[in-house]
Length: 393
Image 1: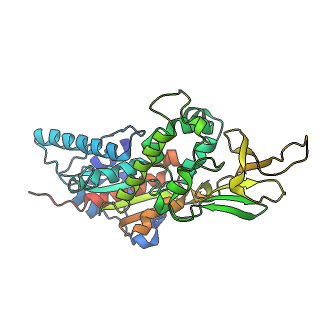
Image 2 (image 1 turned 180 degrees about the horizontal axis):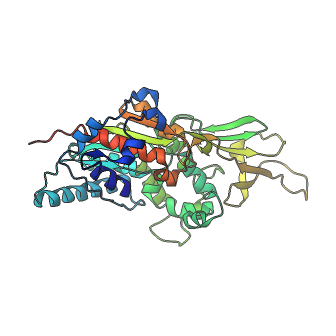
Image 3 (image 1 turned 90 degrees about the vertical axis):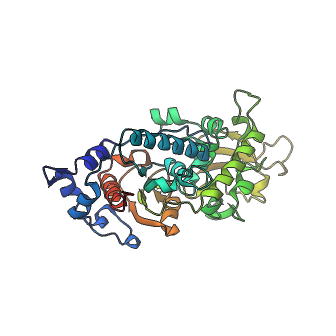
């Protein structure tokens, strides 16, 4: 925020271009910030910046939202706050006609709700949007964390949810949280069960993870461990309530599937060295033949990705213990930013609606805006968007 405030409002000093912009933004090929070739972006010149900022003031505001609520609700509320803010400036005598939105992660989903014609209805007042590390169609990471908790052992994991039971008790009761799961647009076969290199099961098969994964019961690989949903034993919580939230999440994803602003730019992780869960793979370690994966039942679950399963129909000799199948969720292997897989973020590129897309390396999801290439690409995008402004008078 401070970078945007400073660089947009002090692009020129006594007629001379800001040193930072001259060194890192102006005259720099967007390929330096890993712009995708399909974007066909040209270098930004001083004249474009001068015309974009001439006579303008760019106040920068942060607008938070309750991420537990549905993103449509947040979009409506943010749109209302933007309208109020614009009127405040207009009442002060400013010619405030448009805003530019900059997002991070889930904020991108909120911004799409802000401009949606049946949600925030603010498209005409938005000049453009810069999306950062958005899970455009969800992330397999959300399933992984609901079953196995957050990665690492530091304070972040402890706060966000070290165990799957911690994360499930929050996200299973949160429409916004459930909207981070892979949507129908994510595609088939991202949840897999393997043994000795052979794929025993892969879901979804018919393009609907809600009905094929999230809503199913009594399967060891389903999304919800039902005993984790409502540890406080609240009357308003439980599996049936989670189904209602899932239905709303499904509707939201469907409604915004093609909603992007005409002046959109995006930057996100495409880093093989910072893998994320596009695919989520359970690996069964035993060599014994499994006749039916669906038949297996959980004996123990450490809520960190290690299960022991049994086959209740497998016959044993008298006084012989049931055979247990050790099953472990595999590490992430798909390029991304350690949270959002490239597969999801790339939905923006594939939409064909973006003016510029930067597929980048070198940063972790949460700290993306600390990366110099991200900051440069963001400023570049902002100046490009601002240069399209046509004032009413």
